[in-house]
Length: 117
Image (cartoon, rainbow, N blue to C red; front, side, top):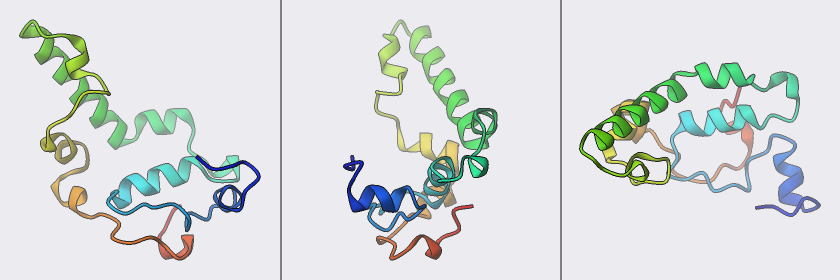
């Protein structure tokens, strides 16, 4: 969380993610979130764009499949919820095995070091 009057907040609102520790997150996920946080609303994806993105479509399908499997075994729905622990194969399915390993290794000096469009 950032104080809404602090310097880190103003940097985020200027599309500058240099104060955010993104280490360990995939470039696909960072880019996806950054696009949704663009200062100019006209540059942000629509809700429909987000819902139709391959990452969200694959995530929803995997979560539904997990829920169906849990319920078929008589398990509790929480075991397949967004709050439950997923197996490593879940991220491979959503992002692909290569992308899951293609992670940010260090903080960025500026948002110009990565294409956030």
